[in-house]
Length: 253
Image (cartoon, rainbow, N blue to C red; front, side):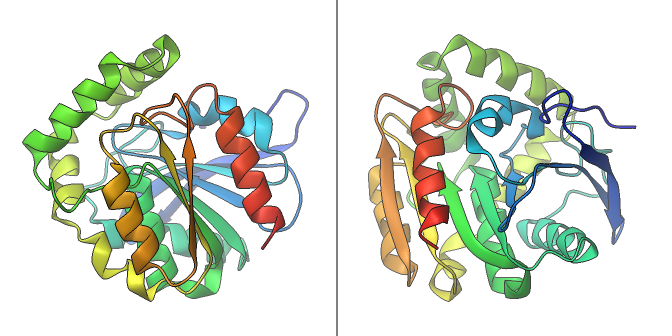
């Protein structure tokens, strides 16, 4: 049975696994309120990295471990961004959720965009934090270089949590990274029909300002916020600024 990682002690949480089309995710669902916030993590991560953020957000939170990450079992074959989107949407339908705010960080932003386009019946809005993959630097070498540069300037808690989750990502991490690189999120963004918030850390090399502005220009209803003195892990540590921005965005929907 998966562990409680995000829900505060004394809070009732629904924790378990959900299987669909040969892949399994882990979910942790707690809190109450309309428009549940669904946390979709980045490459090599898992729901545990959002502990600081969830302590600040309030409302109903659903943290996910995607297949082969966190506590979720490794799938028989690496999922594309589209198959990830289909899995998350099937999970939301199983819980009768039709108004989710999908908050995707890094790779999760690509999955979030595909959910909105392929399964608009489960989504009310998107939060794209540190969105990848920058169309001008679409290679594993470039993305790995940006990630290393970012980690050298990150807070210690980001380094510790990131290292732990990357190790849990298993031996297929390179294959999973390739799945993010070949995906073209720019094909999805113009077809997103819900409000979108793009969040960028001021020092984030994986989501440069030019790319974030491109996304805002492509999405019909999008706004942009930059979090000062943060890198790619803007949601992982010292997330007060990001949490305030996300709460304001959801309140205005």
